[in-house]
Amino acid sequence: MQLFFISNRPKVLERWYHLLGDWSPETVGANEVAAKLANGGLLLMHLSSVNDIESQLVFSYKKNNPKSILIVCTDTPNEEEGVEVLQLGANGYTNTYVTGSLLLEVVKTVLRGDIWAGPELLQKLLRRLLRNLPASNSKVDTAESVDCFDGLSSREQEVLSVLVTGASNKEIARELDITERTVKAHLSSIFQKTGLSDRVSLVLLASKSPSMAV
Image 1 (cartoon, rainbow, N blue to C red):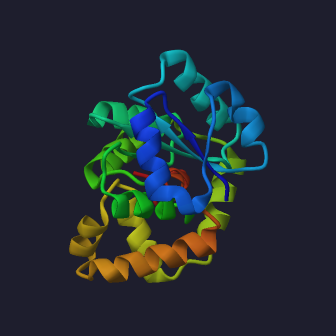
Image 2 (cartoon, one colour):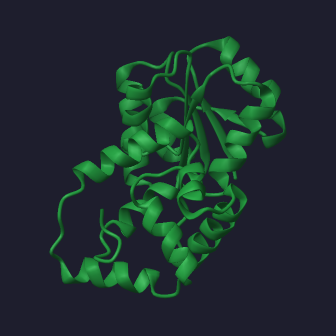
């Protein structure tokens, strides 16, 4: 997958090229995003150096092109900004100056279809989304949700029933008296069976199921 950078700070771009040069990255402007990512791609945006108009362009593109991947980097991460960024569709939110090995892990994580954010931030996002989730009386929504989870094993159903409360892997493990490794294995199987690729989508869909609604 093609990798693109957006930053108005030369030293940040220099660092990214040094750390991720093997991916043959390319620097783009916010007004070029739609054209450059038309066939898909992964975009790193340095939120601390772009202006509001540039960031709005990027988030608008992301909203209309959910298959594209966006990692937002900021010099001073905070929970409120992180939740907002993830709600706008970002696949990852991290410190601009994370170590090279961790930045590479961030990239690999979002490419797998997962969301990268601190555990506390992700749980806060999930709980906020669940609080604000409108009640749905749609028979179609309910049917799709039920069908999606029909193939899960009883243990996977148990894991999902705890996950839908916004619980972390550690909290799920403690609640079900299993290891975190086992939780991860069950979640991998759930993702495969449901065709979903990230935790947030899974929780939101599961919350529509009458048998799992919080």
